[in-house]
Length: 167
Image 1 (cartoon, rainbow, N blue to C red):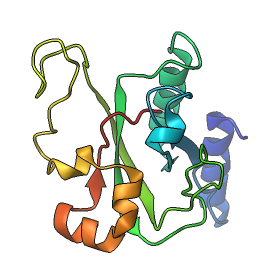
Image 2: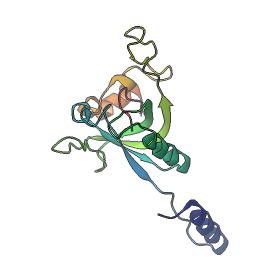
Image 3: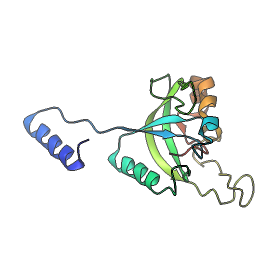
């Protein structure tokens, strides 16, 4: 993997000499359930991240977890499209279910305080729906989306932020 300074130098040289510029690095992260033990029940999906600042933030979020089994309070907001891409699988399932939808763009991390009040009442940790997204775009699961990906997108839009799914 090239360091950022080497990438910048290579891109500058490419522009100066009319060479093709290097493509940005894409890192694939797995979004799953709250813990590795619960992930097979909650399913998982793959999120491509290409923005260097977002890649760094994702790596920091993972590094800040108290242990490898702990979840984070960071949900992932992603844009999706219907159709399998060969990468978006439930890597925790024994048969590695291939979803018939895939993430096309990572938009941002969203911090959620699960200790705050939500639909279930004070202290339940239940999150409220993101104010700018339909409820189904956060309350669905990868399997729910896969039942009819094109229909899901037509009805609820192509942006999801699935509740309970973290890096």
